[in-house]
Length: 236
Image (cartoon, rainbow, N blue to C red; front, side, top):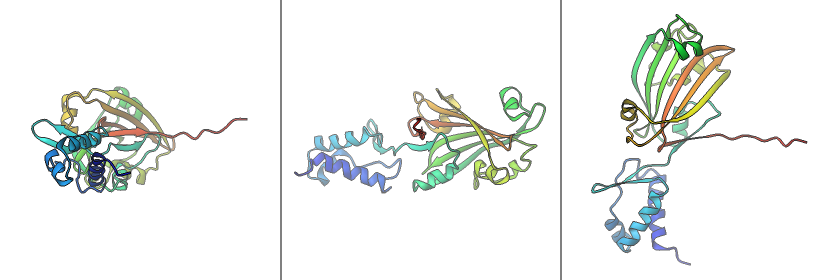
């Protein structure tokens, strides 16, 4: 049985996205152009575009056009991975933009997590982008006593996670996940619309029982998803 024409067009669009011929942000041909290329009606082309858009791969902007949205990035919730490695494994380009690096004396939850009352802590803010699209804002606090050379690193070239793993291997972690509505500045940094919620992951890590880092990671919910897998051992 011959494949329905709209399916043929939809498969073509998905292939162009999957092979990165049409990268994230690319304006795809109009429905009229697609209908001409495939000798189909404009209604058929529209049905094909709708199908791909319903998969979350396309975004329509009225009076402007239809753009590649890309597949939501995915990360394991129960594993601590270097985000640069995750992005590279997807065949995409990773970029870091350092917003700030500073030394603070924290109080409250941060001081408690890092056991650093009246002690200095390093703080960094970094945007991680995948193919030019922001997918994570990293707000990280690091014990200055345990990792004294942290702020000396060039975090446009090496991730904080990669550096910390090299100087003090991480042995324990505690992870908390929640959904939030982002502030104006967070929306600006992640380039998301006002009605898009964020995934907030708070992750504290230790090395041999010593608190090292507290990372607060923000992800745009329309571009990222967290997964986990559990091995169930049959009892009895």
